Length: 170
Image 1 (cartoon, rainbow, N blue to C red):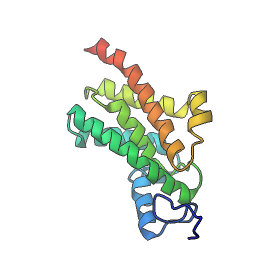
Image 2: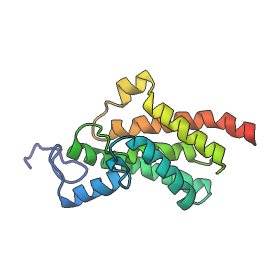
Image 3: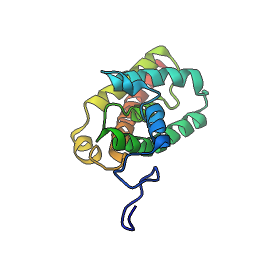
């Protein structure tokens, strides 16, 4: 590494392929526990798997759910960047961002099947059909930020639309 090379979040120079530990992290975590390795529908599969993991593993305490969502969103940035270093810009294999965004839609959501399905569908719709400002300004951010933040915004938008549904069903 030269004196002017910028170090990446995984220790090596930006743009350099990660070492063995970085590749392992990418294959396990950047791919959303392997959901990004399927040939088609990686984002949808990742979101569906994550909803199941959320219901099974995350305690029904708002502060824990919020902590999990914040942690996933923070970890998604370097893990997405790591995936981009291996597979190119915003690769379909990187699905940790789906975990991160879907988690926001699920915070403090009653674990009723209809609401979980609505959170899943709304998140996927906002993730696939991005608002033009998200596509132009957010998705193009470098270093894993664009990969993560477009899903973070999709999760926030889904969450906002879930509030009236929650109140209607309460």
